[in-house]
Length: 155
Image (tube, one colour):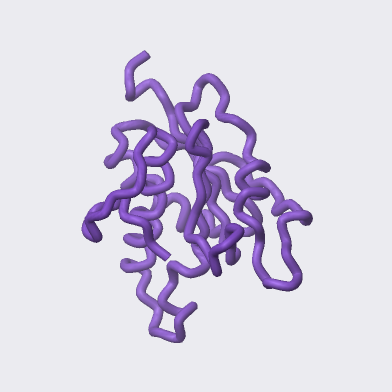
């Protein structure tokens, strides 16, 4: 099956702006040379919430994503909540390295999170980089030591 016949599924988990998903879909198609389909929204799993931290556990959100159907190459979940992984204060995303699922969080990609002025172009650029990074893990790419590489670890 050719690359262009496969699809990356973009799955909003919880409340994620549809217009933003559409804005993210277009550059993702260019980067991966595949169609990107925006799927229906799925609910945030209640058990992912950690009350003590005020964040959602990324691994539980990732586990909530169904494996991609045979018509899809990869599934990328998108949340607009703060997420963490054990041992880290927060993460921008997480991937199932041995699988075909990845997750990104939009929460800390916004300038406003840090008390700065809103910048939609920068927000989209950051989200695209994080999406490419996490999907890159699902294609077997590890972290890169070069800070200018999209696969460089960021936190």
